[in-house]
Length: 343
Image (cartoon, rainbow, N blue to C red):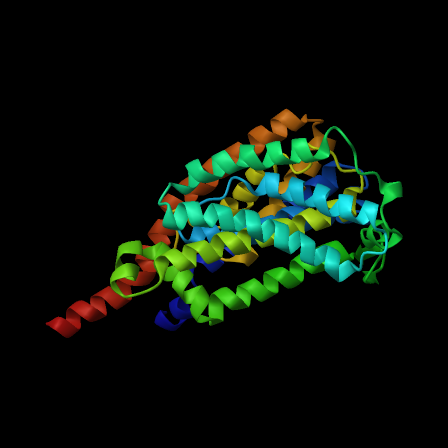
């Protein structure tokens, strides 16, 4: 029994339950909606999850440190428009340079957030709520009511969202989703097997103890915000590749979707536990429910936002009650062993 507890963590139970919920939702929607289980539905969901999932990876890093970044939607929008404008003005710009620009712009905005939170000691929710508005205003002024159109972009950007890396029957995996999956694998390994990842968990679990242990808490929080900004910038590039037509409202609402994906995915809002794989599964479940309910019941976008809010509340409640109970259950054998040793 103890060996089984050591191999399976409470967070993994959330991930397994998410996979189960995804399968159940697919079966229900496939039964109720004609042609729901089709390649078209798969491509639509994975294209959307590619963007939200990328943002959710960065949001996970920040939430693990007991913070939150509400400015990611504006970072996605500004980056998408800025990189799109550079490509429209210079069609010969190499793809790696375009991606580098997206990472640089997003990382700079994340750096501003991180400096204010980590060194200015302003609460993250206040800081990023302010930069959410500031970055959006920068985009509005920069765009000046102009639209980046598909026909002004290089062909490789337009084709990026339409190409197939490989196919299984009628179902194809496209580059946008593959990029996000690779990012999930990389950061899953970083969090699980590097000093950086262990420090993030330690700082989120107990910030005071981490400081007493000599961990560079401020630098770690700063790094989490910078990485979050860079990943949001990369998501902005994916947004540009998917939609092509970019306006000043690009990326609006992604901050709520990313927070919902992270919370539903089992990342503890009080920091210290959770995985980027869970965040990706959370994003997939949310988009699946949104797509399915839209076609099944014809719900509007307003009801979809209400669904996101409901899922956040349910996830926080379940994390507090169910996962809290599981963590105590997992810790009980070690506690009994320690008490027995002291006796």
